[in-house]
Length: 285
Image 1 (cartoon, rainbow, N blue to C red):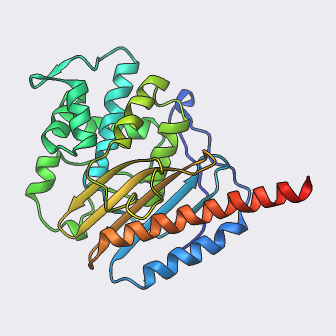
Image 2: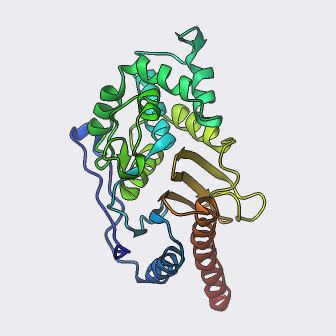
């Protein structure tokens, strides 16, 4: 098993106008316990796990194999949506535009909520194909994500477990989520549209959401290939703080349960932080 590590990272932009502020670099030793908990969960399973989580409130991060590249599968659809919505914000496209006979709005809903592959490829073609999505990521300062093929091309090829194309590190995916939430990549309207669709994700009920308390808000996007099971998105804690999370898994078995247990461990750690803060506040009264 690869050694886990605990880190914070900078998000660098190519253009000054799109430079994304990095999470704070101050150390968070209290999250070392969460790293150890995640490492224990991973070591007890036969699959290869990549995990990253980022507290959007204070920028603290924790990761296990966070800089190792994993097949993205359909989690790439977040980048496709981001690239299209950025064009909408610039006035170059509209969600009412017809793409392959359907509105871009309906295709985006199918792509994110139902993970419809044809809708994803149609929207990708509309922005200029995989190379255009890759250029948008690079111009937005996102490193560690490769977009090489359409979904149809990806599915026609084999050997996904050893693939070096259409991959992302967990840290890079969390960087993208952070940038979409916090940076200047999208307007508030486009951001709310994307996250609203992610909150209705119909393909991830047995992954990040599965073991969280009823009513917990989750905005996520799943990804699945032969031997690959992923889920990435946001978890909202009871106090309103949001945590971006990326969990990539390949090989082994019971991958969905593994994702659910990791998400619950992350949730429990941040809930404990809230309880401790409340206890301290009460003692100071």
